[in-house]
Length: 292
Image (cartoon, rainbow, N blue to C red; front, side, top):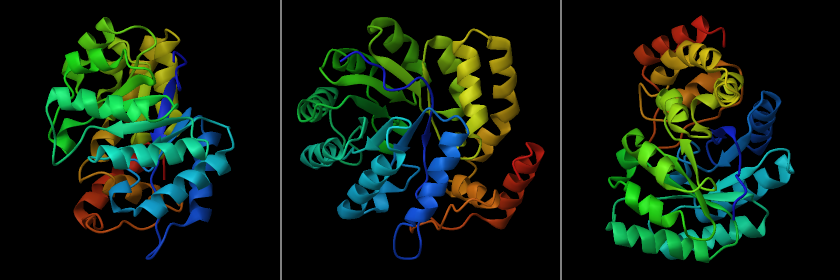
């Protein structure tokens, strides 16, 4: 399976919650905001979407709703990862059934495993569906790195077409040692330009929730060969990228979306409201960029 899912900017979109459920009308507004401002793909129910707080039925319904509402306007990537392989397959099969374009699968967190176990885990999931699959390597959250050699081996597995990579140190090896039909995307907004310089084809982005046009343009200018313009835009938004991680994601991101007058909704415990001090810092950065 050689077709690239997307090139450019994919937003890891927030999930707008009410006190008791998902606000689907608000989700429509957020989706349209993204598509109207140049976002190339949408990741639903990712870490930024607080999927770890979503029961299976809600998780599935949000995927189904998003696929139906987007209606092929841009690719939909469904996060169906789990640290229980069978559970990941079940979610992935559901995403395929309702028409998602691809799935994202995170490395097993908490219980973790060996590198051989990672190969078995991801291969088993990939063999359970026909959708293209991205691996998500985020050692800061999972406590385990999917090593470069492991990714290189997994790149030969049918359906495994790329990685959302948060470990810049190994990106060069992965990109240089895999075929062109295996795509590396940056998983770190603050390292987007270095990732692009190594051969990444875009980003799965938190910042795009707040600055979708800018995130899209950083990628487009770079991939079109206008590196100077891409670099300028990256530097312009770099402080925003840093500030959106001043507290654990997606606390600042959701706060920023609400500051913009968009219906970002509530956070779910264990996430709590941003501190007033950090909120002031975020507000200042947003005003500087004329986002509010």
